[in-house]
Image 1 (cartoon, rainbow, N blue to C red):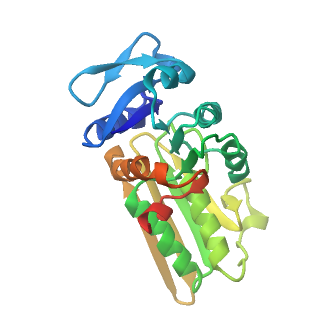
Image 2: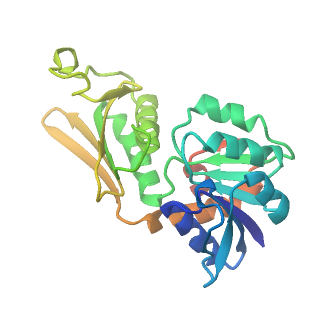
Length: 262
């Protein structure tokens, strides 16, 4: 039985994670952590309620988890990860906003070969979109990304867009110019430049998580799009990561594709 602590348990993703973990025959949520819900409880996914702890250290001490799952905020995830890794507990992190250098520094706090597993997106379709984008960039290097998320998402560009841009940059031989950037009537109209790829971020109520990657060539365009229309789309990837993180051998592992190819 894999015993799991969920950080950010009061949020929409945290509640989905609790339900997904509880539904697995080989997993069990042992604690829910969310400082904003002191004295409250959340559904445990089994028809009951689980008290919400405000301190991860206490939750690890009392629950003895195998894995800590974090879907919190960019300003709190680092402290949660450090606490878990120093206690020798594997981490599965879906919170974005940290650089790869910051993640490497956090992974250095690992004891007992605990693993920091991070994925910018846990939806299988999004992972495939990124893989297809890297393949397309070999032949159509002119590319732009439009990512759309709900209005409560704190970081921009999204982690998925950042990862997609990095994969495109790695795959293509040249960095094409981005026409119009030098003559923007308003700064940022042509988007942010991420590894040489223009990225445009949209934040609106009613959205969940969506991304379009557009490629242009002589007389043609190619469009790749992924839409997460419900947060349940992320749960198979989260469950897969919780199940496999204990076998990864420590350190930082970035990207769900490493588990899909396992």
